Length: 455
Image 1 (tube, rainbow, N blue to C red):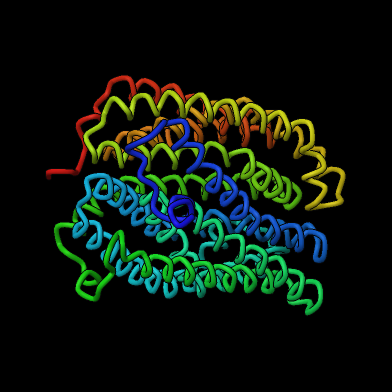
Image 2 (spheres, rainbow, N blue to C red):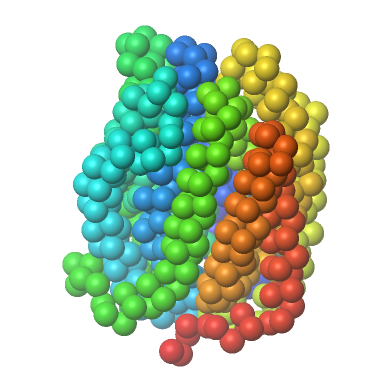
């Protein structure tokens, strides 16, 4: 019995056993976790949209790009730490594993304090630059400032859950997230519906819930003494490990930064179409989050699988796992996209009762449909490359598809057609091109020589 509990709730060694079983056992709780995490923003939008109105719904949507821009520090730390943890775990290098975790914990604290100070200071200016409509400007600023003040919970959840997944543990982050998600739902209804706190209530519900999940993840990590030791000496960043963390995480952080800047440019274009289209875009992106879940899930699973097996020197097993991951990811993505096309209207009606928003949203989802299958290929193959230590190639592909392809197409089509369709046609084009470029890069095989083990 103890052995079964350890296998379910402990670190998972993905260097042994059937690759398909490894990936599925790791991915199922991760997929449920991604679903729960998506519920954070979704519940905010549902409660706000129904109890306050489409203007408040648009305000939360308009806050997304600037929020993502300031979260790039966490993206870099999370990706770098996850790769290092999985490879050192696979190589059984316990001291370097412990040092990596301690360095990541300290770097997260410093980054959180930076964003807690900077975020509220730049929010009003950023919303003005983005030409946020006057009727949602104050609500957007309020929501963003509260989220930034409480960002430390979100930071620790995302980074420590990434570390736990690098160790092969995708179950406990799920448990903690489900607890926090349930709390978020209760607080959303309490603050917004009963206390009439508006978008501020939704923001407070989110940061309180995230703080709980972050604290639980940290406690879980501290108790994993059989795998690593998070002692005081490991919390002082080791120069070599910090440089390695930066080298691996910086490309992903830069990618997210450029992506977020591009999204700010696209958000400005979206704002130019008015509050209704902002509300449509918000609803579509919430549904989009569910459609993307299998892609992000299997991308994360292949990163951990690849990292552990590269650390153990099992390259052939990585290639076998990649094929299995593609088969599983594509099959699940096709089924989910079909379900969203069939039942997406019901999902959208959870956010708003405005028929025009729902009709326009379904039209946009039909434009994006094929792109979700393409993104399955991109996420899984990029996950393999990152797990092997090659974070530069996915970075360049993301920059090309976002900056060179999406933004020019969005503005070009908008100028020619004066239609909000340009926002989603450009996104579809960038997704398809990303799948093509990622497949070519994977087949070239440079990622096979990027392991950090022995460096």
